[in-house]
Image (tube, rainbow, N blue to C red; front, side):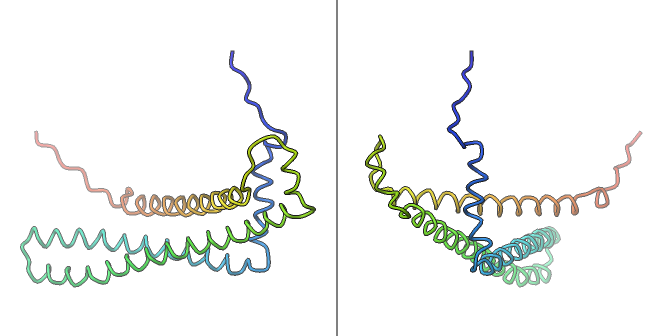
Length: 186
């Protein structure tokens, strides 16, 4: 017989409590900076997708020129590749910088929020009366804040990129672009 897993009191509401506490960053006095970075990240994702779309067409045109042994078209495609590759590289660097800036800012806010809560009314003194190994709680707070802020940002950015890629792929490879059927020989 399977045992029902033990849930600590309030564990069902843990996610809600986390977002309720962490949302202060997204609604607080410096929220405009966070939202500006989010908008920049969304625009960056769209530009990266557009660049990848252009690179796919470049790839088709480049290999068609190789197949036709068209030197003039190969030179044109080689010159077209440089700005596409540069844009892709610049957008990737900007994406990493923007994502990490959001994560660091949110982590800083959350860590300060948790430290203030921890130090309020001398809560840290109560650790002496609780069973368990509680050495260096400040490191635990820092690590928990890192995990609580880095992973949601990575998840949302990954989901956005995936959904937009799927939508783009479906629109490019959809039924309107399907090849006509090949006639069968009798």
